[in-house]
Length: 131
Image (cartoon, rainbow, N blue to C red; front, side, top):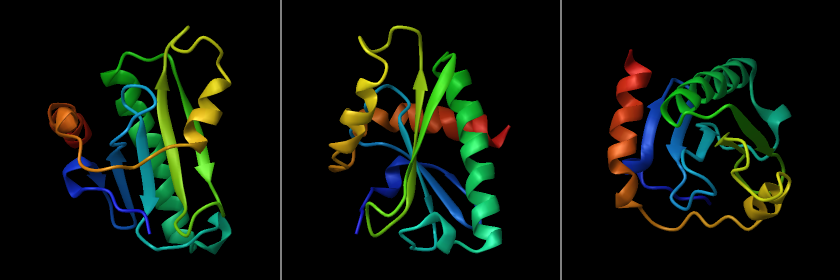
């Protein structure tokens, strides 16, 4: 089971939760979870699937704006864990020496504990989401 502090939650919908990652690869790294625990994307019902992807779209837009990024890496963890989730990572030109190294870093991701250094960012993201 993946446990992330609710203090890192910045977006909640009927079927989806979006958190800032407690150990981010790059600033703004977010984790989007369906509330329904499934390990495979195809196991989600239509409403949950639709809501999940709308939340990914919404979070990506806000993250790009807040972190002044030019693109995002979106990576689906399908069947790897007991709980499906999606990484959204705002990107900037030359943020990593080699672009594809991000995938190896994501593979070794640790969720860790609450990250109090992210609280200010979370409050700003909540404000942007509500507007």
